[in-house]
Image 1 (cartoon, rainbow, N blue to C red):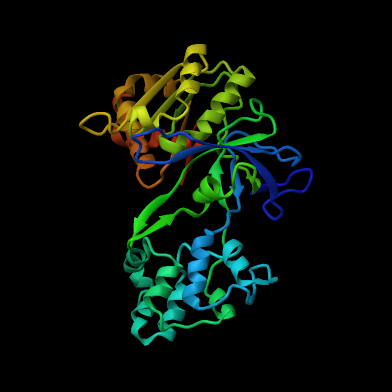
Image 2: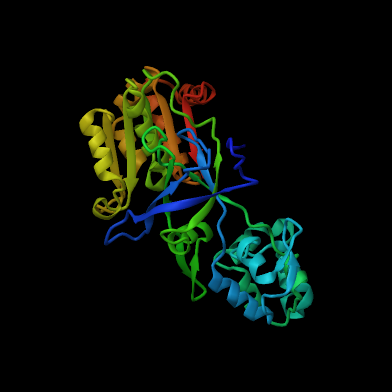
Length: 382
């Protein structure tokens, strides 16, 4: 569900927001590139609550578009229909309207039908081939498919019919309007890696990092997340687990709690690789600890010692205190990677309820499930 502003800006009509700040959060020695962005909402009428996400409509990398046009032996001026059924030049459509960083099944099918030596691509599309298809597609983009199968020829219109519509990306908002009126902050890791001897870039993360420019505009809308809110009762305490960029909404939560004078205690768990290089918002969080906005702040830096330490390990070390908070009615939040981290944090919470709460494994699981049903356990995972 997206929020429409009083001035009519929404997902269907995004606001051309000004990018005010693009700041590198990671320092020398980091294996990552994580950035802090500040975007102006002045004049938009857009409002958000902490816990919401900002939707961004990116454009594709022009260098990749040009390489695809070269592989197709087309100029880019050819007229094609975009997903809105408007006639636009092919180059514009590839920049703004279609997915080119990930090949579609339709493209594999079309290439397999046009190039006899690529017939195996058609076999990959079958429902029983999902694992093989995923393995083949990982690290490949549309250019790879065209370059590996040059006998497959397309007209401009035939080609765009094989492509999916480019979708907006959603990012957890890292600020509170009460602290930063008419602004929205984001914490985003730039995706860059090498595959098949060619550099690859995350579509939206590098659009923001490299291509918007200091004075450029970003098409944005607000995406509401009513399931992921600070407690309505200002006296309710909160435990927040946000490693990496998962800390973004909790920066917003803490700004909100300070601005509203909430008396409930706040406890933050943050994790990354190295404290010297990857400690996002260190001064801000330590300031909250000093002024009492944070009652407790635990960090886990996985590469700062021989053995890996993650946020779930810090949770287990503080098991009795977490149980004391949770059993007294605290809300529990987790944000970040759904595939591994969120599952590990969930398992740690169940273990804490079992051991520190003196419950059987079954009762501990039931207790945590009850927290979810009562909306005291809230997730924003991706």
